[in-house]
Image (cartoon, rainbow, N blue to C red):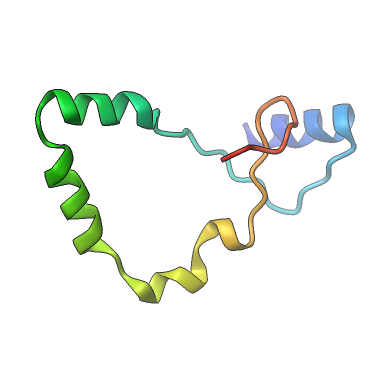
Length: 77
């Protein structure tokens, strides 16, 4: 899949990558709605807050990675 994306993005948009990661995003709106329906929203937020590890912040992918949608547009998220 990486090869196909690299070829298509270069051919269609002139974008060249040295590394390309493909990630399937979690549809958060549906996940959040399901948590609320199950009355687990507060439990989930507490879990997320308690799981935060400040030592990981300097290596977050979003600090050095450009997010591009499948049609070549910069992702808004």
